[in-house]
Amino acid sequence: MAAGVLVGAAGIEPAKVMLQLLDWLPLVSADSGLTPVEQGVLMELRLPRVLLGAVVGGLLAVAGASYQGVFRNPLADPYLLGAAAGAGLTTTVVVVFLKGDNESMVVPAAAFAGAVGGVLLAYALGNVAGRGGGTTTLVLAGVAVTSFLTAVQTFVQQLGIEELQRIYAWILGTVDGGWERITLVIPYAAVSVAALLLHGRLLDVLSVGDDEAVSLGLNAARVRLVVLLAASLATAAAVAVSGLIGFVGIVVPHAVRRLAGGSYRIVLPLSLLGGAAFLVLADVLARTVLAPAELPIGVVTAFVGAPFFVAVLRLTKRVET
Image 1 (cartoon, helix red, strand yellow):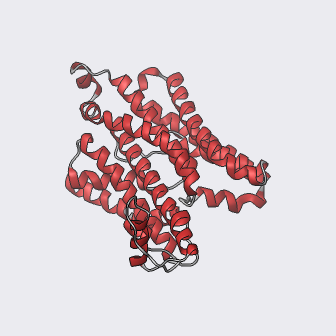
Image 2: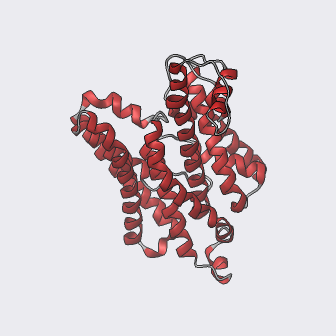
Image 3: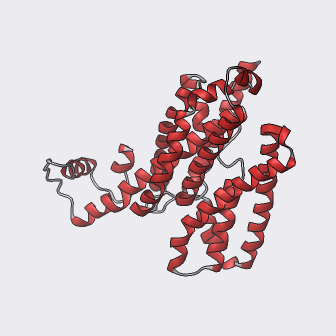
C-alpha cells in the first residue's frame, strides 16, 4: 500500500508524498511543497485507488480460501457458483440499454444484484437437482448456471455491439472508483469478512469430512451454508465495485498455505492481507508499466497469477509423488 501511494504516473516525489500524508494527520504539521493539483492527485486518485484495491483483493482472496475450505478443493475460486456470470449479465444489460450518467451510478448495484442472483440460482438448482449430492452437486449447478448466464450475456452483447469496449473494460477489472465505491463496499466487506474469520476453526473441523465433523458435534450443513453465503457476499461486493479480476482467489490462498500451513484459522486472515497486498501491487504495475497509459488490472493479475498457479500445481504434484 505504501508503494501504491508513492508510485504513479504523475511523477510526484515520494519524499513530498510522505510529508503530505503526515500533514493530513491530526495534530501534525508538515510542509510538503506539493501544489494543490498534486495534492488532489494524491487525495482523489492514489489514496482511494490503493484502499479500494486492498479491500477488493482481500475480499477475493478470503472468499477463495473459504470456498476451497467448504468444497475441500484447492481449485475452487470466488466465481465458482455463478457470481461472475451473474454480475457480467446484469452489467451488460445496464451498459447496453441504459445510457448516460445513470449508467455509471447503476452498474455497481446491478453487478452486486447479478452476482448474488447467480449464486442463489446455483444454490437453488443444486438443492432441486439432488439434496444428497452435497458439494459436488452444488459445483455442477454452478457450472450450469455460469454457462447459461454467459450465453445470455453474449446474446445481449450482440444487441449493443457499439458498447463492447465498455463491457470488456469492466470485465477486465479496475480499482479506479474513488471514495464513493469504497463507501459502498465497506459495510458488505465488514460483515462478510467477520463471518468468514469467525468460521476458521469450524472450517478446520469440516476439512476432516462431514461424517467426522458431525461426530464431533458440528452441524456441517449449517456451517457450509453460512460460509458460502458470506463468501458469496464478499465476492459480490468486490465484483460490484471492481469488475471481474481473476486469479486472486486461487493464487493467494495457495501461497499462504505454503508459507503458513493449512489451518484455516491462519489461512483466512493471512489470505485477507495477502490478497490486499497482491492486488495493490498488481495495480501499481498496471499504472506504471505503460505510463501514462494504463493496463487493465485483470490483465496484470492474469500475467502474474497464471504462471504462479502453474508453478504451484507442479510443486504440489511433486510433493504428492
